[in-house]
Length: 64
Image (tube, rainbow, N blue to C red; front, side, top):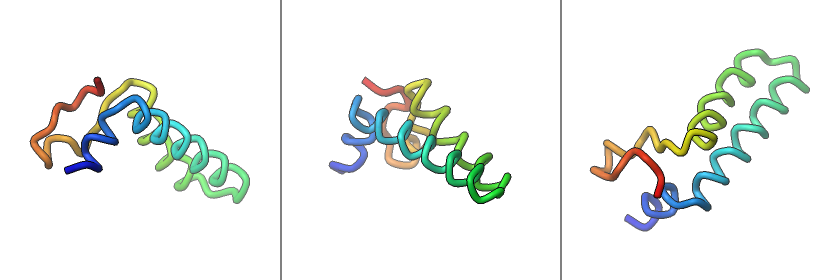
């Protein structure tokens, strides 16, 4: 499960943060409040170092 290892690494944390920022920015630019709110999930996960999908793959939730 290389993708799980990647998403649980610092690079995955940065990727989740950037993706969240992009979704929030796209939501604000397009006037789509729903997209901006959805973007808060990966943004918050990246900022806090959590990988919410980790339990599905029996991996640690907190990034290393």
